[in-house]
Image (cartoon, rainbow, N blue to C red):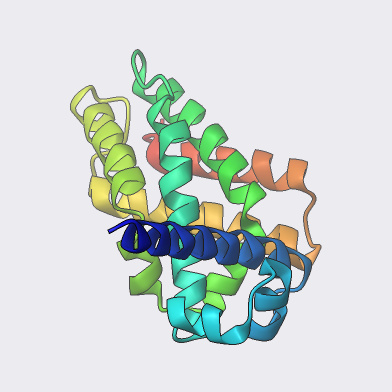
Length: 191
């Protein structure tokens, strides 16, 4: 019985080492290979492929892990009070997360479909949509389009801001300001 437990613990350690290595390697070189990642993890390719059958599967697992870890930070954002101000706080926190992982996001956007990426954003998207729906009920956010559409727009804006930073067309500070201003402009009713 101890061998089974030890084997599971080794497998979990190896998986964590692979995901950690993937995040480091992909941040340094978005084209990093499975061989590069295995070497960074201090493991052989056979071990890596025992956990992840393809680069795409590994990238998706790294993205999921990042989203899950980021969820605790987003869950702590105070969404009480004025819904527009609460959305501003949520956008600011979301941008910090997107900024920290924008290279991984770019790799994921290349390797995975939009549906795969969106499927892993369930909790963050639900949080945004709930907030926008509250803002609509309180007449602080526009109601001529659905909360679902406005949520999708926010996600697209954050992802495009990250793409602008990756391409060197904007600095981090410029992208953060532009993303925040664009989201608030889109969700608030025109006067």
